[in-house]
Length: 234
Image (cartoon, rainbow, N blue to C red; front, side, top):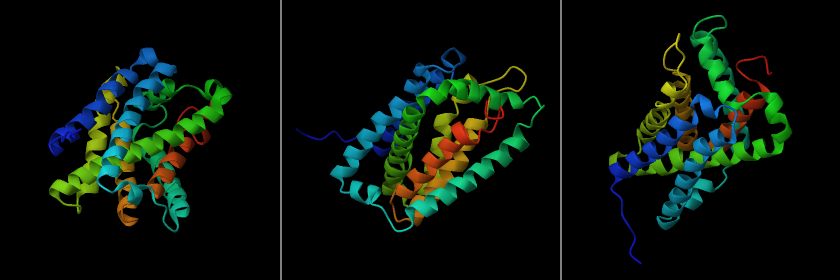
């Protein structure tokens, strides 16, 4: 059976839209704290990650993506700690307590759900964060970065990938908008900053995604469960 070849620019557009459109609906308020929210924001990326892994296997790249390197755990956790600290500082500056833009943070955590609702499902939540982190890294730091590098060189591929990662989160800014604060820019801004860090880790590790996956999962677990950026952990 002949393989279907998709032009690189079209593939990038399909990836961005494949994440952005479901996320736009998933982050709408009627899905706040529901299983539908998680389905819409996670499942499309899982599908894209599977397709990306199949493509990487055919091109002989998958092994390099998932091959552990010395120091992955240490670098991943330390990077995650730095990202959590940076996220805390950024949100305090951009959406300070008592300001109109505090609603941006409140709205994001309303969508994720309160800790009282999440605690009974801690095991599933932890597994979901790990799987989702792996999927996002396979898609953005794996598939997307590789496609960009193939066409336009690897030097800036990780930066362009981070920009596209932020663009895919941009429609959600309107789903999470607040009447007094306008479109919620925290999600795309966070995607850009974190995407640059995770992309740099992959470049530092010679294409291995392992340290970025660890950093990604550690960061998500912290801001979702351990050290919430809003609501005093309630």
